Image 1: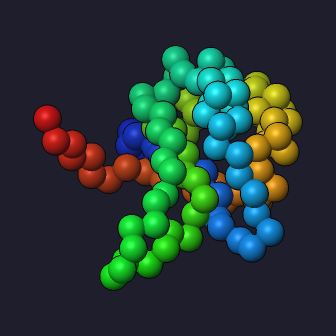
Image 2: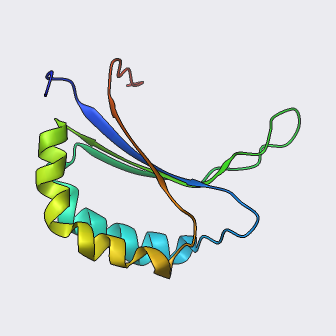
Length: 113
C-alpha cells in the first residue's frame, strides 16, 4: 500500500572473492538500457562505484551500487516489470555477483543547494 512517500530501489553488488564486475559494460550498455526503459518514470537514477579510501576507513563491502528513486512502489513496478526480463538478461554480461535489492521509503531527503 502506498503511503505517499517516495521510494528508493537500491541494487547492491556485494564484493566476494570469485565476483567479477565489468563497470565498462555496466555504464556503457546496461545503464543506458535501464535509463531508456525506466527513465521517464524515475525521479533520480544513480550509479556509485565504491572506493577504497585507505586507513582508517574499511574497504567497501560492495563492488557497485545503483539506485532508482520513484514517486511510489506501484509506479516503479509499472515502469520496471514490462522490461524486467530484458534488463535481467544482460546481468551475466557484466557480473557474476548475486545482487541484493532493497526497496525503501524515503523518510528524509535533504540535498545541498
